[in-house]
Amino acid sequence: MSKKAILTVLGARPQFIKAAAVSRQFQKIEIPEIIVHTGQHFDKNMSDVFFKEMSIPSPQYNLKINSLSHGAMTGRMLEQLEEIILKETPSAVMVYGDTNSTLAGALAAVKQHVRVIHVEAGLRSFNMAMPEEVNRILTDRISNLLFCPTDTAVKNLKNEGYENFNAQIVKSGDVMQDAAYFYLDKAKSSSKIIERLGLTSDFVLATIHRQENTDDQTKLKQIIDGLNRINKEVRVVVPLHPRTQKILKSTSISTDFTIIEPVGYFDMLMLISNSKMVMTDSGGLQKEAFFFGKHCITLREQTEWVELVENGFNRLAGASSDAILNAFHEMSSKESNFNIDLYGNGKASEKIAQHLKSWL
Ligand code: UD1
Ligand code: UDP
Image (cartoon, rainbow, N blue to C red; front, top):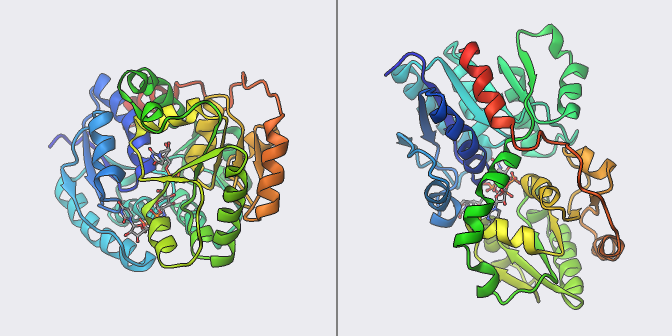
């Protein structure tokens, strides 16, 4: 194996989408890549579908590590990733975002003195109760190259003293915008989801999966109640993450809106771009709403994507049924000009690949 190969560690749905954009650029300029799938997400509609739709190169390894507590999952990944790094001797390890797979990949690399590249560096919610916040802070701290999606992300790192660390900060823009723009035409020509569900443009697209909401019965009940109330006015469609599906099955919380299985990326692009509004606790979906000129109500108390809130595209409603309904009414009559470049306008992955060409 070429010494110049980057070893990319992936595991969760949003990472497949981010990697699709970057791997495509690697192929264009012939940066060799070894992909390791930790197995964190494993259902066909949470993993395989993304590799197929977006022609992501098949992983050389799949560790099949999932459905464990945070410590057990991260620990087992760390152990197996170390073995792979020792065998493959990559020139660097690349990780995306803030999942347990991200932290395990970064830790395995740094312990073997292999350089770490973090895509989507510098984001902060300032809520240390979130597993994602812990993962992203630790990953940033042991990375050598930090690709930041926004000015705020760069500022966060500077505030934490990163200019004094042995790490390079690069503002790249957001690779999810590249993916959304690149795959939209393919989605339009292949997805049938709008017809299948009989949707008009008068529907709200919602997703819920964050641990802070799903594992707190009071919060989950409030969010579901908010969506039930909105569904009386306009149809609410929810592709439901397996985490939330499992939890709802074990409770008596009842749902009146349209629940569907998680969908592939192409269906998701069609759902977002045809919706009236988006409501979510997802990180990625908040930005995708903006990419397609849709207002978003975020079902959390904080967001890492503060520029969306500052520009009035996004409202934080937390997990309160009343606040969600009020935000829906307010946003329904709001007009916004979404024509502003917050995330690099689809050029982030090209920037990343070009930077790596000389950095590696
Ligand atoms: C993880 C990330 C979160 C990210 C999300 C993207 C961490 C700490 N969390 O959360 O930041 O927003 O992915 O979707 O890494 N499950 C299935 N089938 C699957 C995948 C998961 O049934 O294909 C089940 C698991 O068995 C588990 C639950 O969903 O019971 C949660 O999965 P897990 O990977 O631990 O965390 P996510 O909630 O997916
Ligand atoms: N997504 C998808 N199908 C779904 C739900 C989400 O393709 O049923 C996509 C969504 O469009 C976005 C990404 O998955 O690109 C976001 O992943 P998720 O919400 O799971 O994670 P987060 O961004 O919160 O980490």
